[in-house]
Length: 550
Image (tube, rainbow, N blue to C red):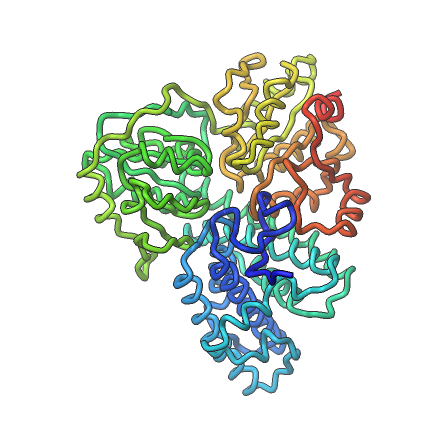
């Protein structure tokens, strides 16, 4: 029997639907996967000691919460492929842990005998210890499944919380929960019922984190507006910015203004065009390309530099013509790519990126036209009377939430076909990069209301929770599940996991997820989710249309 070099089953494309054991389908090397396991073990240890100290009323070490938020984000699928970057975070965590242990000793704080706490953090032991921290350390598959549901949800929550924090919006009750949840995961004897409750609590706090980010974004940049976004190109050289962080694109727009360099969004950065304070920059000229998984071919035709604010990175081919002009920031990293660090005030210097851009040709045009978005909750509420009238008159029969992630598997063509075959009296509510499967189709409108309403990024799925609760109020429905609303969600990584848990915490039932069910959900845990929430997978377009639409 061949021993696993790694084990990772956190994304939808995991090998054989069970787990990557040699190399990640995402391109992650076994060493990177193992070091990320090590980092998560260190994070659990740091959080557990910190929680124990705080419960006694003693003063803990400053910066613990920001440490585990960053570390969790760095372990999201396709975020960081750089072993050195991951190990730097391990080193930082070991140093924090030693400070915390000293405080615990000084105040006679009793600590549990978990291996994450007992291990001394010797560098010579990093590789061996990383294997002990694998998700397979939990032999009971149901306990393992619940723990992984929690930690994957925490990764998604950390991403959203970090974006809000960069805009100056924090909430210690969120990070307090994250610390408590990490300490629970570290407990090898954590009972099943406590873990299941924590899964639902993770969803509840996910809603709080998304609400915080929604407030941060809309307060800083204004509420998203209905916007037509150019998908063609201009004549100036350009910089392509990918990921999710609006603070970063604002800084880039400020520094490129008047330089003769245009800025294009890519993937999940598309919704930047919807915010009044960002769309005012005339050199934010359009969106280039599609979802993250097409970046190899699309980056090669863009011609200019690319900057990643967050995931998703696709490792470039060995002969890629763009690999020497890619920059990473924040929790992202890739070997050989330059990393732009923030200064003490959170400011990033894009001067090198701009200088490279000036030497490049303008982007090669790969498509033309416009796409429409900007239907976050404030904009939807502005259309509320029109929407309610359309529902009451029967012009709109149903809404289908088709948010989530896109991916490279051919099975995801299902979502294009599903959108195309939806009856013309059904409206799609979307957010996240899943929209690239159908946002360029000509699906028309209903009484002037577009049949695809794009709220924005994956974190903007919060919009559909807010809208659903508002519709419940308007129609006087006894339950959110009584609304003419179906959920057919595509998932890929951990930000979709926290969105799913958030919906479950709000009591939403009969959610369908695909194209496959998560490998980290064991049969026993799936049985609970099916019985309590009616959670299910997808089948064929024809059968699912009958089930969801009728």
